[in-house]
Image (tube, helix red, strand yellow):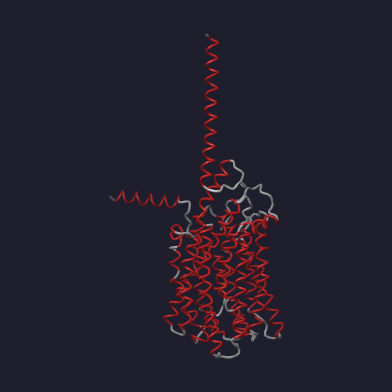
Length: 511
């Protein structure tokens, strides 16, 4: 009995070791490191608006307008970044991997952004924050985001691994984000409205997270090419063709854009400072995000049972419910806890599985006979993310200006409080419902057809059919397969008949 149990355990361990979708814990941590560092940066940038309005005493509408303008520049930068990654030459570190170094630039200029010198005039302050913000969001962030799909596709083997890796990496990303989410609001509360304290905090956060963010670049190698080695250099017309002929990439980008608006409105700090009454509690609430982390383990089986897009749709409704609760929660801690858990859970699939969908769209591009262009897909995603953040910042600044928010005051008018609640609750709730609708439409139009398209693509590659030939359905695949088999059978029959005739002639000659 003992020998049998030992044999079974050994067999299970060996099967697990040989599983092609297996990702070791060390590789999981390494792959997640840059994502985790970037997630902490996004969280830290969430305090940028309140830093400008309350610490630098800048106008909320003007700050919102500048951020909106910067995001339009970011959007262009995102498309350029996708092109740069796809046309980048092979190096000793690979093709996409070197762009992970952008995480250092992200953190360097984030620290600069929150270190505005005290002696500057008002206009100089606007210029300082605008340029540094632009460098973070329009230069380094697009380069970092554009390389993600191509890096994953070249470092790992198949879609099952992509899904498993994307979901499980959330545990590491969530742990780092939890640490940042708890500590940063507490530090910000201690800093108050003192510029020097903000500068010290930003540097102390930036240095260790920039170093941690380099772990993936240092350890995860690219092991395969996604296109033939003799493929011609990507040209601008290849990119424009893909952007023009792939509607599903734009549907996916719409999901990313709306999700970015939801996550970037950035009024949580205002809500906790002026409605709850203590910004440090926002950091304590970050601990509840740990309750959402076990959900990540459910994503791979949910994706296998439903699909990535349908999982995103369902979880978006959960997030919408959480946001709606902020409209009546006020300073009620239990209700705020429930709302925080629901909104955190609702954002998980779209945050961690979007890269899988980008790679799916690259497969669609190849099925259409075009270049795969994973990095262009990543660039379009970064474009949508930047545009969404810009719209969120512009909307927040505009609404706060309309309702009469004044950062110099320690209390706000009822109208200003109402504007903060609106931006914290009903606006993101409505946008989350819109994400659900688009995700379901995306599933019905594309993702449910993906296995069939993938099979057709593999058939072309192995059956000698030109890649640009589009097979409309499985019947045609079967018809082509049967035709090929029939032709092979006819050729075989002809060969046998010929040999029999030859043998008959030889026998006749001997007689």
